[in-house]
Length: 405
Image (cartoon, rainbow, N blue to C red; front, side):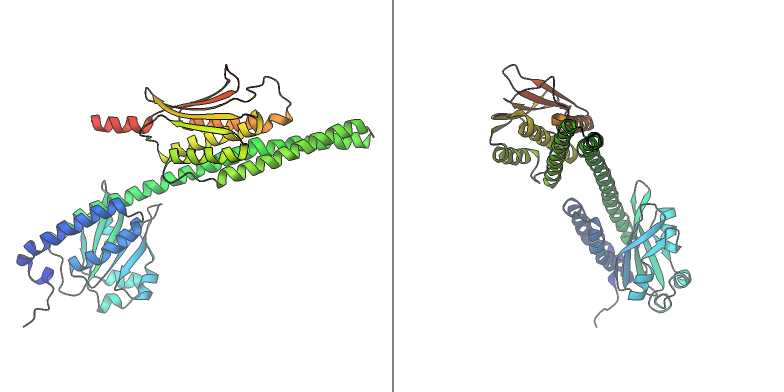
């Protein structure tokens, strides 16, 4: 006669040997998935069926804690009525067995589902489900999410499966914490980049338009007094400012359309140099003297934009025929040089003709400061200009300190 009872519930003595191999497989799969899956919520949803199978449950759900840590948000469910799923989309972090698991940081069972029935107002908790099990997903004793497993009457989760759930919860809790930190870092990077864009618009386009507005005021005054000589001069200033503003706008659009090559900084600089050759009709050599570039993504973006702005300034002001970009590493310091054979650094400039260049240098220095580095612009003895960026090898230093520990 066929045995239709669930093995994890009815035969605990036999289960110890049978669960151990699946347990190792589950933990191995989770460990592998943590290093390959980019979407943690999809990962949690995929393992929900595994949790249901190991517990002998007939349904389940997985929730993650919201950023303000006041609610649990449903991200996946199996075997639950649609109305219940919709009602339980967002629940308080203190709600029922989920709240108990969060407070006690342990796998919790709740045999009295009357509370769940009142909260959800769904017949599922009076007919199909008689026990709710909550498995918290933890990181350093802080709950990051929870698995809910819904069991029929008479089904319990064996102790060895509970121990497995604790291991699973720790692994997936780490994944949730890493995902939270990644989101936080992305928000910070996005905010910083937006602030940098706002500064660049203010310090180039907005300042140029402000200059044009002032010239329009004196132009209007000259026209009112019929001083046509001054009026013509001020009109020329306005036309020059508008041309500069238009050029600045085109440069800003181009810069923020450019995306750093996903293969890393070195291929991105190679592509940048290739594009500059066509735009400025000048020879560009890129010499990479670093065998292994170990920069963070944010550092790569800052270096890329500094080189990009340097090339824009050369194209607009230097009248150079040859440009050399070098990337080197000496004594724990990255050194980036962008050298040209153009007109060099001029001591005296007409105000309107150099607005964009000076503001561009300001933005470059701000980017260098974000790298904890410094930016120097100076004339070359042989003629032309060199832009030198020097900043510390932070990523490599961090790795070395970890190995030493």
